[in-house]
Image 1 (cartoon, rainbow, N blue to C red):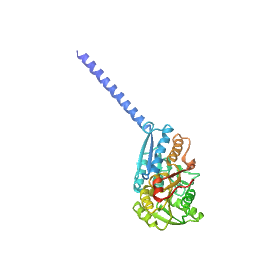
Image 2 (image 1 turned 60 degrees about the vertical axis):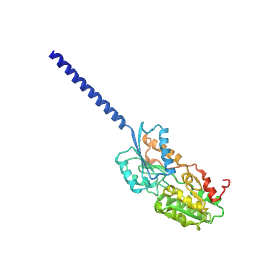
Image 3 (image 1 turned 30 degrees about the horizontal axis):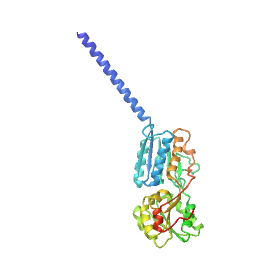
Image 4 (image 1 turned 90 degrees about the horizontal axis):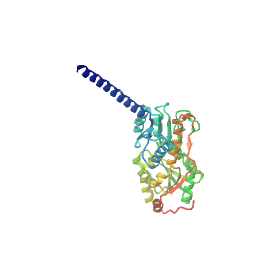
Length: 323
C-alpha cells in the first residue's frame, strides 16, 4: 500500500514538473514570437490634415507590402503636439526602445531623432529640404542613416496660380513660421517667384501660434493676396488665417490640400497620403535589407493636384478661371 502511494506521488511530481516545463516552454515561445515583430517607431510633429495623411499613407503602404501592425510589426505612434520639447522626449524614447526603424514626420521631429542615433534607420517625410535642415549630407546622396521623401511643393507654380486667380494683385503677403526651416526655405523660393512675376511682397512671420491672428490682421490693407507655404504651424492655425482673410476679402493661396480643407482658398500642391505611401516603399526596402538609407536619394512626389475651398472662394468673391 505504501509503495503504491509512493509511486503515485512520484508520478504526480513528474507530471507536475513536465507540465511546468511545457508551460514554461509555451510561455518562452509566445514571448519569442511577440519579440519577433519588427518595431517601427513613428514621431509626428503635430496633428493637421497633411501630416495625418502622410502617417496614414505610410501605414497603409507598409500593409500593402505585407507589414501589418499587430501581426508582423508593432507600430509605436507618438505625436509631439507641436512642441519641440516633446519631440526630444519622444525621440529619446524611440531610440532607447531600440526600434528597428523610425519614421519622422516633419522637419523638427526629424531633427530631434536624427541627433540621437546614427545606427537606427530613419525615414523622413513632410520635410521640405533635408539637406538645408542638416539631416543628410546631400539630398542626392544622404550618406548616413537618414533618407525619405520631401514635400517640396511647386512654389513657383503656386505664385503663377496666384497671378492667374488675382490678376490685379500687386503686393503679396508671405506668411510663415520663422522657426521652421522648411518654411524659411520655401519663402525664399516664393520671394524669387514674386520678383520674377513683378509682384511686391510683405513678410508676415510668426514665432508661435498665438501670433497667427494678429499677424494676419496686420496684413489687411497692405496686401492683395496671402501666400502660405507648407508650414506646420500655420497649417494647424489655418482656420484663424481664413477667418481674417475671408472677412477682408483677401484670397489665400496655400501650400497643400489640407490647408484648403481648413479654410485656405486654393492650392496646386502634393498629395500627402501618396507621399506617405512613397516613403513606405523606401522603408520596406530598408526592412528587407535590400538598401541602406545612406545610398537612397531623397525622393519627391511628381504629381500635383489643384484643390479649392468653395466657401472661401464665395466669401472673397472670386470665380476660378479655367486652369
